[in-house]
Structures are given as C-alpha cells and as structure tokens.
Length: 468
Ligand SMILES: Nc1ncnc2c1ncn2[C@@H]1O[C@H](COP(=O)(O)OP(=O)(O)OP(=O)(O)O)[C@@H](O)[C@H]1O
Ligand SMILES: [Mg+2]
Image (cartoon, rainbow, N blue to C red):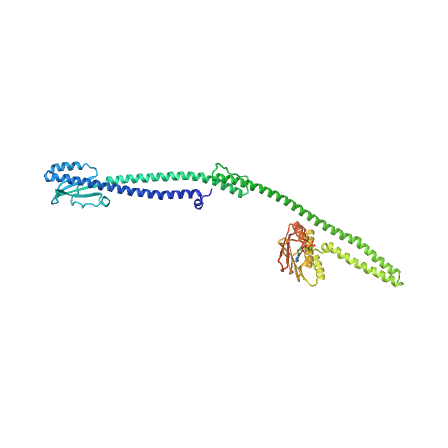
C-alpha cells in the first residue's frame, strides 16, 4: 500500500489518536504543574513553621542559661538540637552581638541576614533569627540556618512521581485509543474497500456484520444495498442485451431490404429495357410500316401513324428516364463522378431556381460497386429532400478522397431542421444504414434557418480502386 503524509493526516485512526494524545498531554501537564506548586508551598510553609517554633523554644530556654551564665549546659542543650536533620548551623550571640556559641557549619565570615520565607532563599539555606529576652530585657540573639536540600529532594521526588504517573496515563490512554481506533477503523476500512470494489463493478462483495453496533448496522445496510444494485444491474444488462439484439436484427433487416430494393431496381430496369424497350421499338416499326404502306394516299392514316410514333417516342423517353433513375447505366459505364454530374445536371434542369455546384478532388474513377451506388443514392435522396423541404437557394456538393476515405458533403442554405425532433421518413435512416454497412460514418449538421449539411466518409476498398 502506498503511504503518504497526506493520506496519514486524512486517516481517521491518526486523527483520533492525535487528538486524544494532545488533550491528554495538555491536561496532565496542567495537573502536574499545579500539584508541584502546591507541594512546593506546603513544604516551604512547613519549614518556616518548624523553624519558627524551634527558634522560639530555643530562645526561651537559652535565656535561662544565659542569665545563669551557664554556657556549658547551653552548649549541651544546643548540641542536642543540632541533631535535627535539616538544621545547618546554630549560633548564639550576646548583647553586643559577639558569638558565644556556634554549632554546625556556620558561615566563616559575616552572619547572613534573616530570610523572609524559605521561598525567597537563594543560597540554599533558610536563615532565621530571634532576640533572646528575659523579663523583657534583651540578653542576646539566636540565629539558625536550615538547609533546603532535604525539602528540595522531597519536592523532586514528588515531581518525578507525578510525571511518571502522567506518562503512564498517557501511555495507557494511547494504547486504549489505538486498540479502539484499530477496531473501529479496521471495520470501516473493510466497508471502504468493499465500496471501492462495488465502484469497480464487482457486486459479489459483502462485509461481515460482526456486531449489532452502528458499524454492524451500516455493514448490514451496505450488504442489502449491494444485493439490490446487483439485481438491478443484472436486470438492466439483460434488458440491454435484448435491446441490442433487437437493434442488430433490425439493422440486418433494413440492410437486407436495401440490398433487395437495389436488386429489384436493377431487375426492373433490365425488364423495362429488354421487354418494354423491345415492344416500343416494335410499335414504332409497325407505325412506320403502316405509314409507308398507305403511301400517303390516305391523309388520316399518315396522321394516325404519326401520332402513334410520337406517343411511342414519348413512352420511350419516360421509360428511359425511369430506367436511369432505377439503375443509372452511366454509373457502370463512366463511373461515379460522371453519373453524379449527370444526375445533378438533370436535377438542376428541374429546379432552376436553386444554384447547385459540384466540386470533385482526387476521387478514384472506380471506387467499387457498393460505394458507387451508396454515394449515388445518398446524393439522389439529399437532392430530393432539398427540393421537397429546404427552400434553399444554393446547394454545394463536395466529393473528395482523403487518407483512403471517400468524403461527401452536401450543404444547402435552406430552412434547416431540428435534429433532435422526431422524424417520420426513411430517407435519412436509409442513408445511415447504407453508410454504416460500408463501415463509414455519417453526420448531420443543422439548425433552424441555417440549412442542413450532410457529411459522409466511407473507407475505400483498395482492391476495387482504379484512379483516373
Ligand atoms: N435539406 C433539408 N432541409 C430541411 N429539412 C429537411 C432536409 N432534409 C430532410 N429534412 C427533414 O427531415 C425529414 C426526414 O427526411 P427523410 O428523407 O428521412 O424523410 P422524408 O423525405 O420525409 O421521407 P422519405 O425520404 O422516406 O420519402 C423530412 O421530413 C424533413 O422535414
Ligand atoms: Mg426523403
């Protein structure tokens, strides 16, 4: 698995642990700091109280010894006092501030000033002093120094204990959070992985529900959802397959009917040529021989036979034109370009109010029978549609070969059409089918009032091709 810093910050597990640890550290630091300051105050107050009561008692007792000038007993008494562990030095001075007894490690030179409170001590010794009075008369002075070392050791121990307890608590909290976080995120990760599988289209996945809690309920709902999606997808796929099959059958049918139609037209053209053409020729020959037989004696016979000749010539023209539309012989004889020129100029004759231009570039003289008839029929259909619906004044037809594809574009400047609307005729559908049967593409471009352009591209069959 790829691991990046961003993905780590986004991970639910990381955020859960980080927030719990941060809160824990802040709260416990405050607690430890508060406890230490209370402990410090308690210890210093205790030392001050102890020192006060000791010095008071010593001052009282020392007064008696000093009145009796029994310094030896006073020293014994004070030596006992010196047993006290925190006491660093003890000194007794007479009325003129001369030291008469000094015990412990008293400072060598000047006697330090008395400290206001153990909290303000800077040299590690809390100095305190008191006047010795007997019956209100000053007898001297007593000065004591208490070492802060023991007190500081006790404070230090308390601090270490407090910090250790806080650290243990942080560790336990992290451990519990990690375990809960792992349990939660493991199940959420399973859900997320399953959701990704579903996104990839795999509907066979399911997640274990494990317990009845919120995640368990979510997993059960997820499983139900996947089953439902799977069912609906299957139904949709079946429907799509059915529709696809129907569509393919439909296309097959249209293409077969187009081929049959083309065959039928070719057959009809041949029949018209062979049968009707022969008959008309025979009628014309008979009319001529009737006219010749009368040798001009009967004016009526000449007129009637002349009329038969005119009508049969007219019939021949109509039949010939029908034959051309059914199967233009010119397409087989002179190729696509000439057949199109012929068709376009015949159309232009019939619609002289529309100007039609035809541009050709690089088109093979023989592009293959199927391509020829397809392009020819499409041009025919487009020109018919333009005449029927477009109300155009210009039509441009371009035929070109580009990168092995034959490209045809027929553009008019008529009223255009709405391409998204429903259509009833078969012309445009037939065009599409013919083009797609050749592996080509067709596109229509139109807007209301801006004419219609039909573009077609069909791949040329190289074997069939013969350049002019
Ligand atoms: N050049 C055009 N300009 C404007 N509208 C057009 C043009 N060509 C086609 N249409 C519109 O598209 C519709 C469908 O044309 P299509 O050729 O498919 O059918 P049709 O001509 O109505 O019938 P059929 O071709 O089957 O005889 C037409 O009815 C017409 O409204
Ligand atoms: Mg049409």
